Length: 146
Image 1: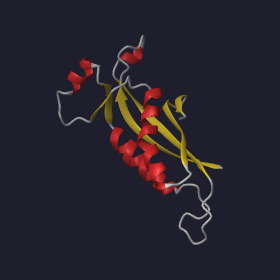
Image 2: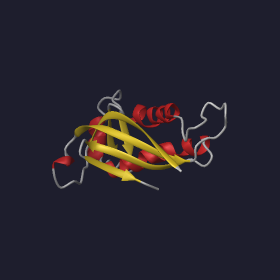
Image 3: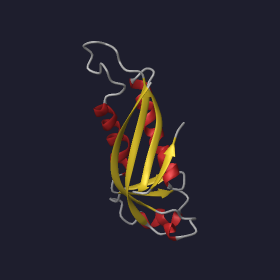
Image 4: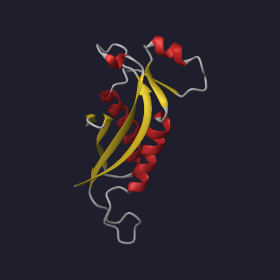
């Protein structure tokens, strides 16, 4: 088995409404997401992916379409956080991503996994998305492994 990883970054706002400290205030982050896939090398001479586990370009496309383009420059808000949901409804043009969980790094790492895993499973036999890491700051990250 060989593991490969691809990273993307996006900017988004959030708040953790029940947090006991300053993270209950609306604020933003430059998030970084790393998706790691594991599998055997493709051994098909002449195939475009011969010698690869996963094509980095395709993994980047999925990260971009399923994570970056959904969350970038948006505000991620828990559906039960009616104060923020109502405040953000002032302008219907704002990118608001309503989620059924507190928008912590831990939950967002799992959310990213859930967006990517079906695409990996459909495209590659025997290749698994084994880990998603999400940095909320340069020194703080959450890791989701199924």
